[in-house]
Amino acid sequence: MEERTRAYLRGRFRDHYRRETRDAGSGDSTRERRADLPLPPEADAREWGYIPWTDGSTRMVRHQSLLELGEVGDFLRRERPRHVYFSAGRYDDPGADDMDAKGWRESDLVFDIDADHLSGVDPQRDAYGEMLARGKAELRDLLDFLTSDFGFEDLTAVFSGGRGYHVHVRDEGVGDLGRDARREIVDYVRGEGVELDALQRTEMGTTATRRVLDTDGGWGRRVHRAMLALADELLELPEEEALDRLQEFDRIGESRATTILGAVSDDYETLAAGNLERGGPGIRQLATVTTERVVADESAAIDEPVTTDLRRLIRLPGSLHGGTGLEVTRVPLDDVDSFDPLVDAVADTFVGHDVAVEVTDPGSVALRDESFTLPEGDVSVPEYVAVFLMASGRAEKGRE
Image 1 (cartoon, helix red, strand yellow):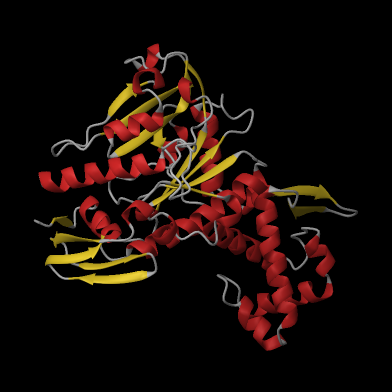
Image 2 (cartoon, rainbow, N blue to C red; image 1 turned 180 degrees about the vertical axis):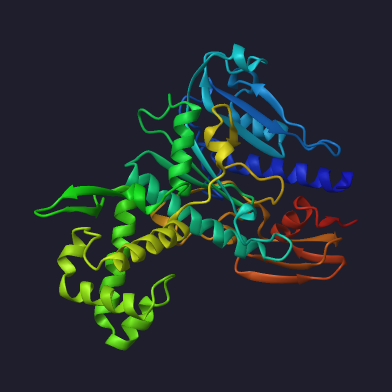
């Protein structure tokens, strides 16, 4: 990145923070302004860090406390940083240079979804919007686990401004969880080691023992729900189509499919109770492949090191991402489906006028429901496109 590009972005980031972090009572009647950025709980007990717009360096300035930074809005307007972070951990002395000297108290439970790390995603091939859509699908799965399986209530979902999403959990009791406990949560959410044998229990019947799927909660409930959904689907299909549907599963041929369909048709209530004996090996095989499919479909691909790191620094919601120029945006849980990062995370500061840039990496950009196909060389584009291109290394600031 050339110096004139850095200088331009540094200046416009400053303008953004001046515009967005003024006191609500500033007297500016031309635009309804927000108060200073909402801070995480116990912000003064957290470590803070940032990356400045320095010459070719992305080295972080960290081990900062709010006593050293000052009021966050003033800091952002003064330093106009490239990236801003705060710690998941809370400390007795957050500004201490040595981690052991900080005096760890507790840490938020933080989850990170990186779209470019997802299975089947290729950042060189897939469009940015397509990757973010995959990331949001994983976010939905993660939130379902956190609310349905764990019962967490104090959740904050955040678009990272880059290629993914963060979720902060601050329910009472999670703060003092150690690395091993957090790793267990990660393994559960990712479906690590989930197999049918671990989801069933043995019960004594009137004449023999029987295997029963645990339907009270967790992965057992998820598998049971999927099996009942399939049973309902089979009962609505003509017999031949139902048999064909069952034979789509591994190791279920025509004979087993006939047995399974008969069990579903004649004794639906037994299956609804989780009984895996009715229908013989066919039902158990169906339960096995259903387990595999449910784990593949419903597990959330979270980044394990982020969740298990008690000292992790995470992006500040409301700040700008120096690699895209997009805003690190809180996503209300009720609005996850409707949230569009390529629209909702575009900062108003960069809307309303065009800027000249020299494109070095031509191609397409989609922002604010518009698509731009950019050739190499000098072009004039809306500033939010220009900022995205410059911040992501695809363009330099055009010469005036």
